[in-house]
Image 1: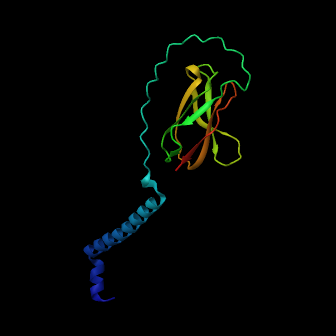
Image 2: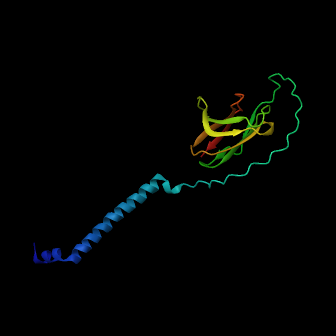
Image 3: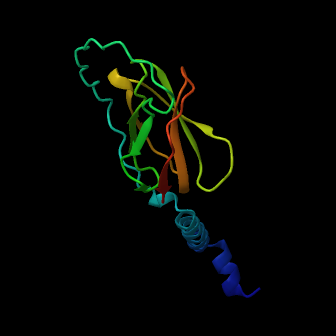
Length: 171
């Protein structure tokens, strides 16, 4: 070792400088590497719509006396219906399923069911339930981040009847 090298090794300022430079290099490598990983994973790019505060229920209409139903053949009986507020939504975007079970009383439990479009598979329960209103009408607000074509229907838990399917493209 030369006398110059011995003098630098014993100097506390030289030690502090080397320590600071080493920390700067290690911190830069970890910071830039971490930023690259976060950017590649897409964690920083999530734009979900805000969750709205619970709304007050719509006022119910005064019940009208219903005439006694006439016996109908199965072909004449009104069929359940369903509509989606939008057939193309972004992941996480809210949409509504509305329709009616014409012969259902108010307050019957309805289960939202889902499956992938084009798949010959059983229906899965979507984690949303709603109830029928007067006249058998219903409205369900839902959203999902799972992308692709999805088929939805509503099943009346009391009667076992289901609506036709409605297709919504997520993504």
